[in-house]
Image (tube, rainbow, N blue to C red; front, side, top):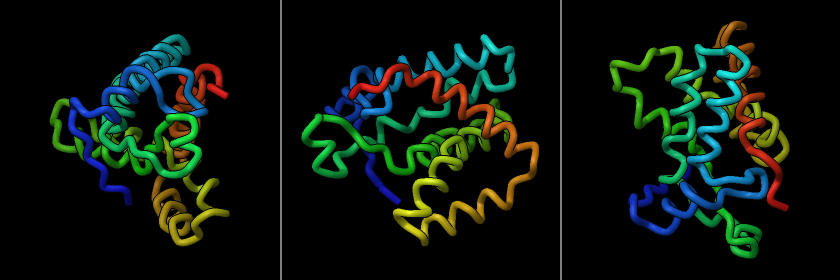
Length: 157
């Protein structure tokens, strides 16, 4: 797990929040967040309102340069950003446990797929989490992932 904890006024935090994420995101975290929330509400999925707003709240704190590609294109990686987001909101009593689970696991489907070929130990860990969730949560995570993808906009490159 990446333990990056950027300060609010650091370059990684501010750049990723307002301007640049990675090749998969056209916008910084803030605009992406608003777009995800908009997509969920446009589809009438009001139960994802809070998750849309909060799903990447920890992302700027985790921004780091992971590899040569990040340096070459001046982009960021955000390993385990969803866990950081969850850690920020986990004790907020005004947020439902359901929303906390969506925030915590919103990247789980992608993480399982990616880690299966890149990091088998991580794959087993993430697959065990998936297997512990019920079918209703599986469906909701699949649906939320659609809104998350729509919120990314055009690929940067």
